[in-house]
Every structure is written in structure tokens, then in C-alpha cells.
Amino acid sequence: MGLFKRWRAKRAAKKQLKAEQKAQEAKAAEVKEVKREEPVKPQPKPTETKPAPKVEDKPKVEEKPVKKETEKVEADKEKAAKYHVSQNKDSKSPRFKEWRVRKQGSKKTIKYFKTQKEAIDYAEDLADKAGSSVVIHKLDGSIRKQNYND
Image (cartoon, rainbow, N blue to C red; front, top):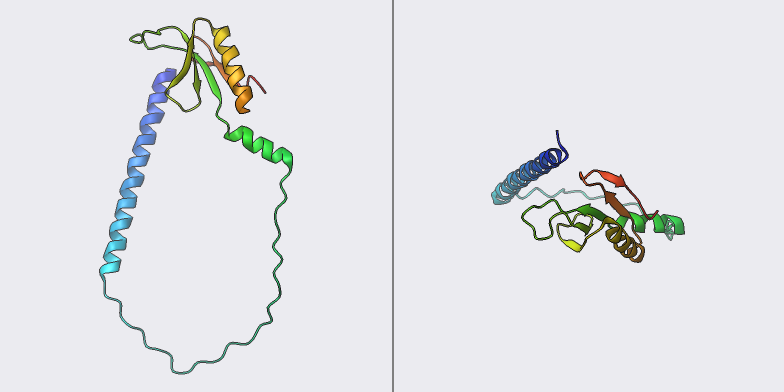
């Protein structure tokens, strides 16, 4: 199975999963509405009540977890989106077969370049400013090098 066929199959599976989740949420909402419509019967009050035993209140000491600086830096790197350098495969585009720089998860291209080297240099600059890394793709779309700036 080709790379794009696998990608389309994953995408279709995700859409189907989301549709199933929405259907389940809709059913759950209907069940909640039905439960709300039922009249609430008053419960009899207990006749005898015993006073609760008194408990001395001790001041609670809240423990704050201490995070190390390295954990914060690693968390920031994970949150920062990677930049991808790949070739434009859309034959209908006026920028067909030009190298492009995209942010991870985005369909919008940041900038197009004539050579892959120019695109890599530009993506490295963006990644340095954002504190992330660059993923370089080959002509066929497979990954040539991942975490380029790390």
C-alpha cells in the first residue's frame, strides 16, 4: 500500500471514529433528557438524626510539585510544532515541484523555494526562533531526516 493510500485510510478511519463518537454523545444526551422529564418523587425525611462527632480541624499543608527546568524545556519542545520541508506534488498548482516549508498539522504552506537547501535553511531559522525542529522529506515524500535541529 502506498504512502498516500495509507494516509487516506487513516484519515477515513479517524472520520469514522469521530462520527461514531458523535452518535454516542447524541444518544447519551437523549437519555439525559428523558431522565430529566421523569417526575422526582420526594423521599421521606428520617425522623431521628444523630449529631455528627466533632473532628478537630488540622491545617492542611498543600504540597506543590517541584518541576525541574529540564522537564519544562522538554515539555516546550513537545508542544512546539515541527517544520516540514517537502516537495509540492500538486500538478494543478503553479508551484508544482517546488520545495515548500509547512508547520506540522497545517495545510497552508509558509513559503516556496526553488531548491531544497534554501527551504531547509529557512525552516531551520523558523525552528530556531520557535524552539522546535525540522523534518526533511525526500522527493517521494518519505522522511529523509527527522529532528534536524536537535
